[in-house]
Length: 277
Image (tube, rainbow, N blue to C red; front, side, top):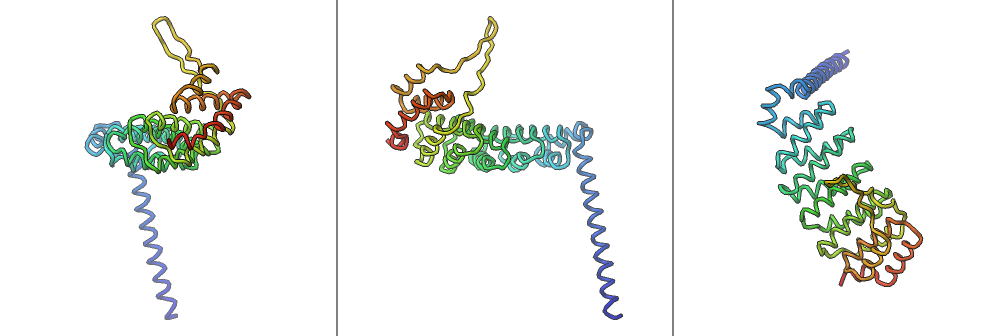
């Protein structure tokens, strides 16, 4: 009996502590859901909190808010123009909603002028996501980042090589576009990137990107993909950038003639050698 009483007392205390912890957690969740609700966030109090504490206030919405409020929170984080918003946006890029994930990745890319290294680190991590839509958008955001003049790192080149070998053809196409952008900027590519690029060109193709429709004064016109003679000219007489562009266009054409031209060109002028020169 002497041993039984302390044991019962211990379990009573443990159950009470567990009950208090559960009550505190329920209270915290309730308060968080209330603060993240559309009514509170649209109120004068909510607008004032968003102005004074944009990052912390948005983090509450990202954890407890409905989808629309999480989207709004991502937008608020994006316009802060601060690298301190990157951790919250990175977590939002793993949100259960595809819309929130897409907006978060775009928000990360928009912060390139303010925290280029932090943005690159976050985007490269997202390029390795298990979610297909996340990988696609992260690779596209990396290409946008390169277009803004961010110096590519060795880690980015490894990511490009991995993207060229991705099981998803859309990811491969995004990675191939990154190769073209790197060559356009006269960046020396690592041999592993050239090898992965050549293997990608020899592999299956997703076809050309959707044609762009542009509006002009008299209506609109469709921007057609380049013809085979145009591509052949760029392949035979162009510099490295034009050659890479032509190889990608041939890969997208995915015809017997296009694949023959790719094989002949790669056999005559290995990309690794050309890229090292």
